Length: 221
Image (tube, rainbow, N blue to C red; front, side, top):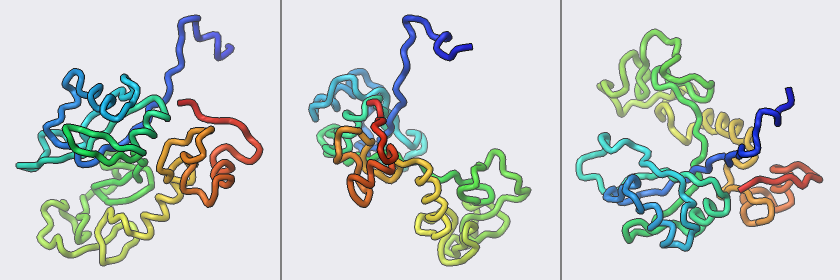
């Protein structure tokens, strides 16, 4: 059966969502209030309707008492508009907000603290939960010696599970990012905007990494 035969004249292909993180947003901002996202868009001259969705990373009920700021995820379906938010920042309730790409994180199990092998707590095979601080058989939150640090990834002391400076973690993250040529770049790549290629050794190298030498393929917005 031909792939296109499954589509009718009214079918539309949806662009993939592009997620950014707005850092330290005032918590009195409610993304679910009608019109609030449009206010953000107009404040920096963004096309109205560019922000397709927004939500705080941490649920409201888990906030600390007296917490004033929190990180917010926003979704776009247009690379140019997402990059504008990253480049110019946002203004939310009178505060200038820094925006970055939502980089994919390594999968981590909070039961055995394995990093990067693709499994999570829900499907962990370890019978007894291990502490992310001292490595003993108890929950991390119940650790009597949280100042004692042991890394389950590199099997060494000095730092705890999930420490972002761990060499084993960094190597696994490098493998993950190499599988996605856009990972590690500041912007979402736009074929005709060289400044979005970013963080390659040079622009020509960046083009080869993303599209391959001699190719002219590109990305939709």
